[in-house]
Image (cartoon, rainbow, N blue to C red; front, top):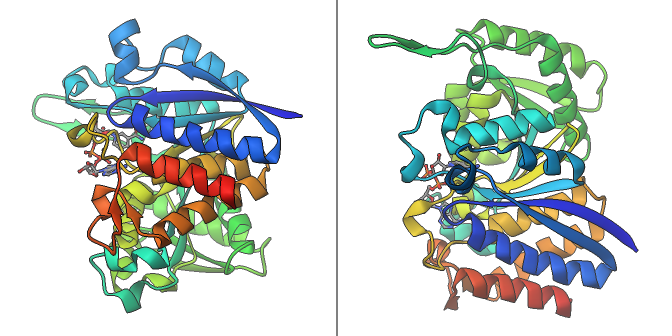
Length: 356
Ligand code: NAD
């Protein structure tokens, strides 16, 4: 029997609640497809700060590096917001991404037919929207040096090396080859030198993918076009900061941030996590939407283990239960038949997988 080792990081806020549901679903699907999943639970973020005084303990990184994939909930919360930057939960996440070399963040934004009404945008604009944001994850302004906060001045550095742009561009073109064969590079080339380099490199890489078209769009325009006519996008390729912002915007097109998964790949071990944070405002109330987390587990099966059928089945089960009208509170006002808790949604999805 095939067997996979997963480093599970529940983290803070709603992280533990949604991870429990992902594991429930993974157990059902692994039974059905006859593979074994071994979970090793490790601490990170605020939970690790409480025990070890640091957001990413050495042993967590070690176990992550030895595993076949990292399944990650979310980290952070007001309790740790005033710590020094390197001690904050978010620094742990940046360090984990860097440590695993996960430079490519894939963020699918799909509008489920059943939830078209859930968006604040008109249904006819939304139907059939299926965008993949490919965000660079280990470079750019989040990592660039020098950086400093002084009394009267602060600065950060946006820096990219050619190899970083080239490898993420290749990921985007390869993803586009399996989709509608269009890459839109989102940048700010009219102002930023880094963006000019992105354009040069993407143009070079494009020569190796003659079946894929490459377009360019300034980030301010892209922010507007995403709301105006999202169907024009297939794959959005962009740097770290722009991708962070645009993928959250894309999530609102889909109805709720609680629906969107992500895969961070390209390095030794992939990280699979929802795009949202730890949502401290709703933690421990049993109302968090676990679907983004569950769909992240599906991406793990597809990208880390090549268990495509199992991944497809999870996605199908999510669609089915939405069709049947089960909703968490964040998407409750959209054709809900029943408002469910986090645990109930996980159970509906798991039961559906068993039935299908
Ligand atoms: P957030 O994504 O946690 O929450 C934004 C809003 O969306 C909140 O109103 C929240 O209740 C809601 N929401 C998020 N996920 C939801 C879900 N699954 N179901 C229903 N509603 C959901 O962003 P924030 O409030 O800006 O940040 C909260 C904390 O999370 C901060 O400490 C931040 O640094 C951290 N954070 C962590 C990650 C990560 O772990 N990858 C990402 C972003 C933010």
